Image 1 (cartoon, rainbow, N blue to C red):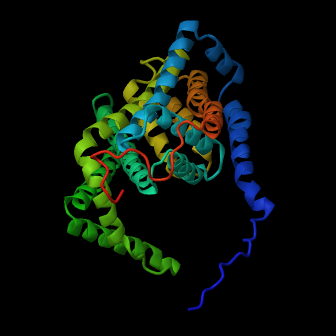
Image 2 (image 1 turned 90 degrees about the horizontal axis):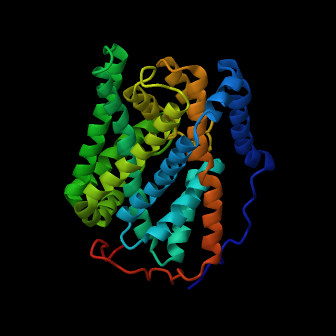
Length: 364
């Protein structure tokens, strides 16, 4: 029997310019928003006045709301990963949020860091995969559903337009399709395999014009997903849904409070309109052009809320305060939790030795 020596040839590193182009693009875009877009859009001194006119009580309420928003991330993680403690979820979510907010491609890096952290606490890769898949699915369901809900609410506060109706119908159709596919995937192993094959055919058709071969193995992957998640979802889908909704609505509450405290009144922009702009701006984060959507989210929120009737300076102030509390604040907190994870050894376990629960199949 012959054996082949492993390939130890080091992989060539990417050129420096390719590693720097992403961060530089993000910095340029963020700088363009602050130093070109905002001065063109409104008077920066008026923006600063709107921020400084907030009372100590209003600032306190905003900080408490921002901290609560960060805390809701842990509830989602503990609901999708039985056995994970709130303290472990706090360290994991705050660290990975900071990574996502600072690095280009941070979502992929954060996912790898989640596997590493959970593994250091004794959780298997399969259990982490189930948690990430389920939480990701539910987050996308809410992101798809919020624009639909916002547009329905707007029907009661403003005359419907053709654009709103078409957008609402398309969004509702996408959400219903996603829910039906999930139900079919969970109904039985055979049904899950059929869903996987159907999705593979659609993806292969999309890739064909780009001279890419058909994707394979999606039936097995969907069956494996069904086997690993059916117990969890059967027992906890209510709790997972509630915690995911709570997380998104808590983020919206920070934006609404920041706008109101900076001078954007209900008469200028009602909360259903704020929800609609917020919901569509959140969809931009699904395309990771920049870390945390920096630049794109600010422009979308400021432009949309101003078009809805908000005073430009007050809207810009509210959006910037919102982004400081939800985008900037997690970065130093995540750095602190990362240092804690590196130094704390009391939570460490050998791989795959985390306590099992009735909601964790033997294969996971």
